Image 1: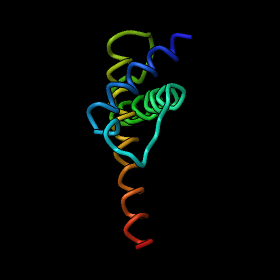
Image 2: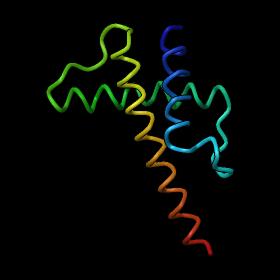
Image 3: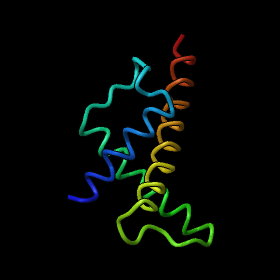
Image 4: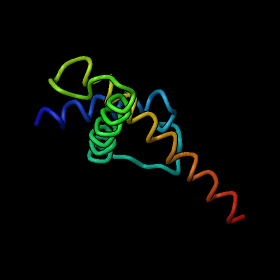
Length: 90
């Protein structure tokens, strides 16, 4: 349950920072936002672990920050892939 809350908050923050809220081609509901946030937590934890830092351990602001970083990166990559696919189809 705590992962869902962290995922939702991180996903909402990432959507706001990356501009996903304003894009019409990427529709994320509440469940999609949670999935992005949780996946971002996994991605952010792996990235920080590979960089030599501790990954996600306890729930707290650090976990939320790692999930936010990962979710933002995930949304930027998905957005870039969506942009390239749309230009190829024209």
